[in-house]
Image (cartoon, rainbow, N blue to C red):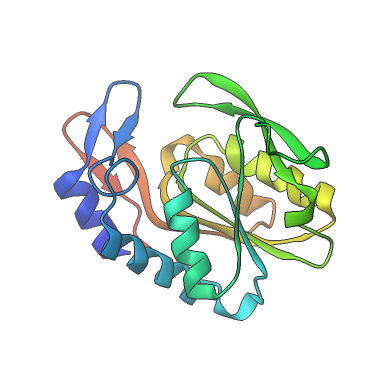
Length: 191
């Protein structure tokens, strides 16, 4: 998605440790119209897959997942990183290590929200090491649901997770893939 690459170049910042900060438009402050454009592009890519649920993990992927859910006309579910008092007892869980926060979370989704008849699309803002996606895949598998694919706004291609998932036969559609990143430049994969 050329528009996303241009937005990353004009508004993104590379931080030490291979961190790409896009908080000005994608996750802390959100460009609402642009988020909806991303959602429509994800819906276009997965139009023929009969998606019944969009699944993400809190919190930065929620806006993109909701936009995709709106465009696909399906519910959006997010895995919580922390159990709260209003969380049901019956949940699917998976352990996920966060590359950004250097912390392991036990993510959880209520069993009422994903079931064996669902065709689930994972949506997230970033794909780096693939830990969040793999955790969500475990939840989908435990629910007996079908994974139709993963839609990612920005993939850090140089970290290899997307290519590993693709090699396993999992459909991964990333709207922008960064193949190289330094403090001075970003190199996008030709798509």
